[in-house]
Length: 268
Length: 294
Image (cartoon, rainbow over all chains, first blue to last red; front, side, top):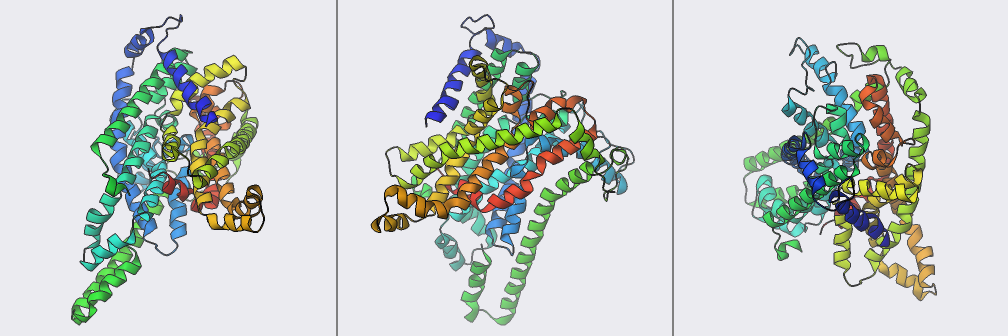
């Protein structure tokens, strides 16, 4: 607990303090002013939000299917679990480079599409001229890498669902689809909420994937924070980005908590 | 949901249902099973195929990397890998990464395992909120923590050292270690511990002779997980180091001006441990899932 105090609470407090003091050490909104006028500030916010909006549905669809399959006790269920969890141990950076090797101009995707005769000259997927396309490649890379953590949480949730409910549904000859929609999904709601919150917070931190795929042609909030610190040596500005990320994370957590209320009898 | 319940669903109405209908239900069940396996294989391919492509990239000669279109079945060559390992700073950075991961695992276990035990065994006040706090610390972005910490470490004079990165990584992995170890301790029945006490063990004796042997694999898994997380972590490592980066930080800084073979070899080396580590911890890691149900 003391460790947490030292490494979470105190940096948090001094991070806020850093953000609200200027380079010269005055307390005030100077850094915030600098933040808002930072070139690329607004585009980094919109990029982050678009990315988030695309990642969540893709990733949750994937994760729910994976979790249901793991839980369905197929033959070799340990093997499936192993495969689906593999990306958990892969760093953001490695996965960014991996997808770079696929999407780059002379990369695997173009190469395979050419072999299949679908395209005749390489398509440029990673270009600063098509930020939306860039975001899509990042979304794919992230959906590939970080679905595992959601799978873990969802499998935990699925195993906590009492068998009785599904057996009751069987008595009424419910189809698998209806069982999923009317029994599993509502009971999984608290779990989904936890996973959503965790995933959203982590998505605000996506960083190395962006650098590996887009270099400097696309900015998200975390890359701006890192650049402010490492390239421009402006810890105050970097801390301001950090605080903004934290506020957005807290806001989205609060949003999920209010939009998806969990009634206490369900939470049991 | 499972095959078992599916069979029961088909078996219950058997007396009332005529034979053709039953055969139809059987076909539907077979179709469902086939569908499940097809889905599982498809998703496995989605996970594995990109890894295969990266491996091909890392183990073909650099001339093959610049060839287009690329060959899916490569001529194996260690040239690219050797080129990367001979690059300036790579071996030392790799060594540093390994040491940082080791220190992180030891610190995280020393602090996290007792906390996990307390969470699993003692019904203290605020136990629920303690768990919520631990889960939610993970919700605070690394970005927010690393920048002020960099300033602290500068003041303490440990900026740009192995210890700075290890301390930060410990803080990051701690929530996971606490939750995983707590699920591991949960799986050992209290009765066993109490039985040992009946036969004359002290509380500590019972812990050392009964609980520890039963939980060693699980605890090792928690440690292995923190090694993996530390080895992979980029953001804090890049902020907290300057001249002495860990491997991910080194690669990140070199990214914009390094050739593709360098990148692929680096990414492969960063990816490789997952195959062993996830295999070792796949059962225990699910404990994190069950424990994080708020």
